[in-house]
Image (tube, rainbow, N blue to C red; front, side, top):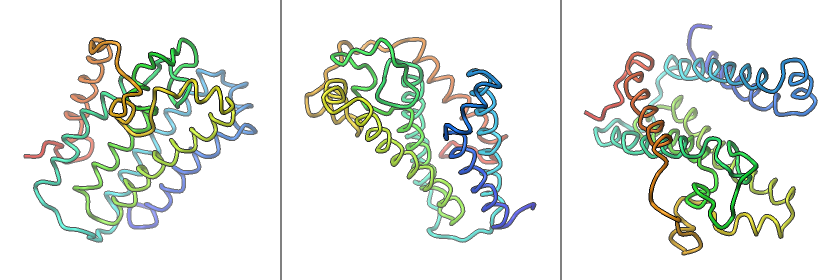
Length: 231
């Protein structure tokens, strides 16, 4: 299939399958045994990126069905949201955070939760910001289905992780670890439940966030075919 709704539906189904099936223990366990944990993660990551690239390309080739019209202000939304998304991704990946996806289990201090104090699920919020902000300037049906689904998956995924962690840890342990964190960004800060120990950001992670943002900015036109700059 070289375009049309058939390709878009096929790419969407494959994307959902590649994310649902490997998470099942009956399939994940033999793959990890055969490839090793790092091999499994590398294969899974490469496969996910390839399927995502196909899905985005299929959305571009799908028939254009306008839901809302284009306006110059709409392009400012992802331009303003993506620096924050890159910061959340850079500061959320691999840090001590047993409450969410992408965080390490050891070394977490519930009194000083780090990025989790700002928001409990930084990586998933980065995905939600990317998807929701890109839905605004892409008011056709295919892109709204694409970005709307990603936004919904990220938000529902956060709620599902909270429920699973609360069940696994038990109510008392969950309450202790999550006391100074929040589901919604800045909620713990606004409520006074969390105060940062200092405002000095990790320079390595800050540099990684800037480099990621610049890479996305420069690659957007050659990869997507459209500049990400609002003007």
